[in-house]
Length: 275
Image (cartoon, rainbow, N blue to C red):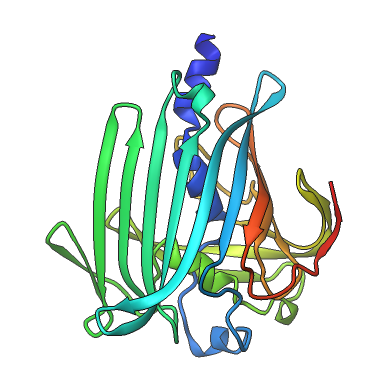
């Protein structure tokens, strides 16, 4: 039981959300990358996607957490904006080991996906954290806790970057291509990439999909080893929703599967059969 408790405290639901963020990453916008964007957005007002997070503990996978992404379209600071709320939480049966209730929010412009505001509220055991970041596109700065940070044009937060990446036209890439990304998180800008690995069929807990296979570069830390150890499969249809991610971690391994969706903009034509 001590091992299980340690595992849950190490691979908490910050990973449930964080893994999904990392698996898509965050691209700086430039003229070259604009040419590989899809014409129309891959998502719409009212979209909801649910994921289950499975942890491998002592050779078996436990359904340990859930992450839910909800998208609305609204006005923010006189901008037409998307508002994405991502919530992650441990299953209640495991709350006695390590309770997690995380909530992330992102506001970004409809026309070019530029971030406007990012909010993070974390409850993980006894650890509480609140963070708000406001982005000033005119001065290329990010304001956090009354501190200003200079950032290059096109830097995203960890939520709106996912939705930008969903709009990439992966048919424009060759197998092995690297797609560069930049994000602002914890008062730093991270420059990374995601590698395009081609297309294949993948069987998940939900069903079997035609999928786009990707591998993001991960930052070495307490959870990940770093490098290209994570594999992500995205639906090979205009929605480009992540359907599975898996990776070894510091204690065992993690697997994340899409388990439910509502109000997708396009038919989920990549779904071959239900599980």
